[in-house]
Length: 471
Ligand code: NAD
Image (cartoon, rainbow, N blue to C red):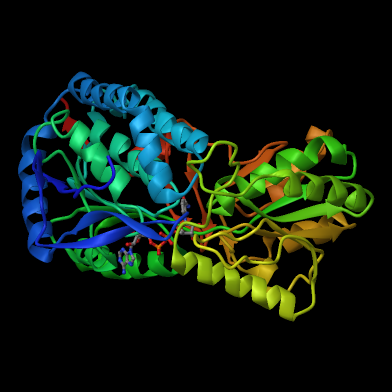
C-alpha cells in the first residue's frame, strides 16, 4: 500500500487533487507516499455531495444505517494486517499497537451500529401528546489528529452515520494515508456522498469550520486549535464538539503495592510513546511508597525497547512528526536546564527518526513546565505527595480537565477522591478505559461536549419537540 499516490474520497469516488504533499515515515524521516492536498473547490464539491446525499440518507431506517456500518467493520477486519502495516509506516507505532487500533475501529463500528436515539414521549394526556425526536444535524465535518488517525476518524464516522448524518473527515496532514487507504476500501460501502474522506493542510480544517454548508464540526486536537475552531464555527452557528488536550493526573495512595502497579502505570503513561490525550501525564505517588515505586518504574522504563515500529521486538515507536519532536525536545531541554533530576533517558541520539528516549523526571517543582504543560511525548514527571486535600488541589490546578485516575485498594476512599477531581473521566485502578457506551469529554480547557454513549450520540442530532393538541 505504500509508494503510491493516494486520492480523496468524494461522492463515492477516489478523486486526485491538483496538488500533493509528501508523507514522512517518522522512524526514518523518509517520504514514502504522496497525499492529495484538497483545495477550497474540492471542499465545495465534497460539501455539495454530502448535502445531496443527506436528503436521502436522513430518511433511511436504523437497519439500513446499521448494515452500512457493519459492512465497513467487515472490510476493516478483512484488511487489518495491510492497514496496520501502513499505519505503522505512517504513524510510527509498533505493528501490535497498529493492529489494535484497526481492531478497535472495527469494534467501534460494530458497537455503534446497535445504538439508537429513541423518540421520547414527554406527555400523553387528554390534552396533549408531546414527543421529542432527534433529527440528524446534516453535514458533519470531522477533523482529526495524528496520534490515532483511524480510530479517531471512526469515533466520528460511526455515530454520525447511525444518527442519519453525512460526514466529511479531514485527516491530519501528518497522517493522511491510513485513512485514504481505508477510503479506497470502503468507498462503495455507503451510498455516494454519505462518507467522504479528504486530506489537506491545516487551512482545509479552517475552511471546513467556516463553510456555510457544514452543520456540525466534531473536532479532536489541541486546545489552541480547538479555540480557533469554536470561533470560526460561529459563522453559521455550527454545532461543535471539541475533544482537546489533557494533562491527566494519576493519584497513587499509600496502600498500593508499588511493585505491582508500577508497570501498569508505566503503560498508562507511555503507551503510543505518550502521544495519547488521556495518557497519565503527572504521577502523584504517596511519599511512603515513592522510592520503591520509583525504582520499579525506572526498571520497567529501561527494559522497554524504543525503535522502528515495523521491527520485531519494538515496544514503543518514535514521536510522530518533527513539530512534536521539537516540542518535546524543548521541554526536555528546559527540564535539564533547570537541573531537575532525570531518572532515565534524557539524551537524544543524533540519528534518523524522531526518537526521544523514555525520560522520567524525579519530583520536579509543581510550577515547572514539565508538570504544567501537556508534553504529548515520552517524558513524564513523578511527583511526591503526603496530604490528601493537597494532592487533589494539585491535580485540579490545571487548565486541563480531560481524565484522571486514582489507585488504591480502598475503593471508597478512591471514589471520594474521584468525586473531587474536575475531569470528564476518572478511572479507579486503571486508566484510559473508554468505550462506545461511555460518554467521553473534557472539563475546562479540555473540551466542549462529549463523544460516545447516549450523550455523545445526541450531539449529532437536533432535538425537535412535536406537540399534538387533542380533543
Ligand atoms: P492540532 O490541533 O494541531 O490538529 C488537529 C487537527 O486540526 C489536524 O487535522 C489539523 O490539520 C487541524 N487544524 C489545524 N488548524 C486548524 C484550524 N485553524 N481550523 C481547523 N482545523 C485545524 O492537534 P494535533 O497536534 O494533531 O493533536 C494533538 C492534540 O490532540 C493533543 O493536544 C491531544 O491531547 C489532542 N487529542 C485529544 C483527544 C481527545 O479525545 N480529547 C484525542 C486525541 C488527541
